[in-house]
Image 1 (cartoon, rainbow, N blue to C red):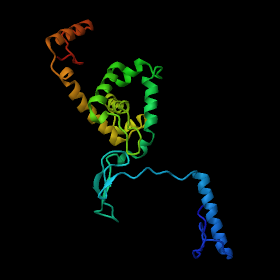
Image 2 (cartoon, rainbow, N blue to C red):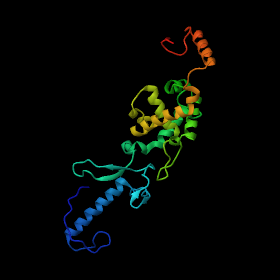
Image 3 (cartoon, one colour):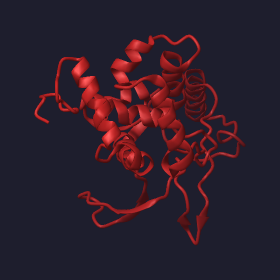
Image 4 (cartoon, rainbow, N blue to C red):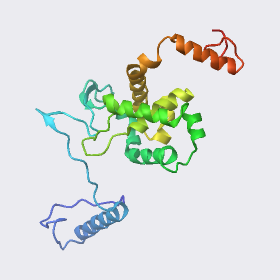
Length: 243
């Protein structure tokens, strides 16, 4: 590719300007055919682009990823002040491309009948036992809108509830940034932050009355007994034994 095409007047052929006796024209058409053959060889069939999103009065109703379009303003030097539509997932780049592979790997590693990693490793990495984590995922996916499985504008499944909850738990468990989960769970930094926010809000909403409260007399008796059995008399739950 990158041949030096010479200028020629349009001819009457259906495809490339017709047959001509001029050797210069024939050479140019031959170069075009060779370039097109090289493109077909290197890239195969033509790229199939997804259908255009639905519009109303010229304004898009949905983004390609299925989320709501956002009106933004350009601040570039060559085109300042231009209004355009973008999406909250724009920073995620190509991370969404292989999200199905991310769910499959996560399932095979921890949740299949023969997982790659043992229950002990699951507890260490997720900071809880697997049944508890699955209970949380089930409650969030059925009662919190953000974690419900959906499809985007082209019919692809969204990130699974397992991926979203795992991204949130990994950030909480290891104290890492939002961009530390994209290589494994295959979701972008922006989405990882959203997962963490919706996860914490959902946990407070669904489990706050049960767990995020002051201990009852029965709870205190049980916690004191556990502390005594472990050699920490009078300790309720503090690691440094101060209360």
